[in-house]
Length: 280
Image 1 (cartoon, rainbow, N blue to C red):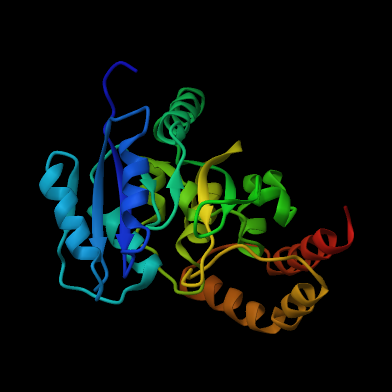
Image 2: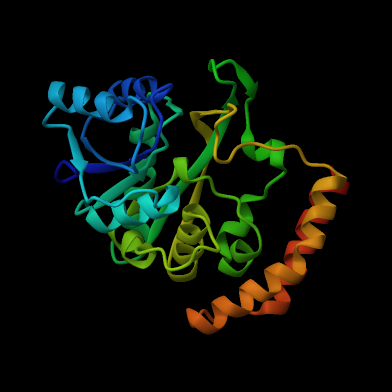
């Protein structure tokens, strides 16, 4: 790099005191230390805010806290606000209860800079990766989240397929400034932040997958979202949800003027999930 690029790590918190300090420790142990933390709390009632304030007191040059007086926006709403508040050239999305492997920042940034060299800084670029699934004590459950879900990274090139099926987990995302600009603010509640971001970056730019886990994805009883098992019950649930999806996708086309083939999206959702269940 011709200059040191300061990355902003966007961390929304809400009642995360049980695991937050372990996550913060893993960030401070990164091989690349050219980052700052931008934290926004969503109205915690436990010790989360006290933990954040303690860490900011100890590392004032590394941690900025957003106090906007708005509570209960949810994870997607908080990430949307943090992307709008960010002024950095590069951002990484961070959950409060995971554990970052030491090379996460370094490998993500190196891959993003390589992509910018190839496609230009004006191209929206998103980097994402695999994850190691662990229990609440960080004991391994699965080495590869993507393999467990039987997901195919090739669909990351097609925004219509990403409308049909969410494959990216937000805690692996890194964006350049152009990627932030096409992603923020999040304009719908139908998609979670990770799917919204991946759709918009794929629509206007490039989504690039690092085929190795760069963090430990903690599964515990208070997870908002987490890992799941693929089975026929999962497929039946997806099929039964198709009328709801069609109504929602039609609404998106009209309200957000998002031009996509509804037939392609519906067919892909059914076919992709069928193949995940019945094909090895």
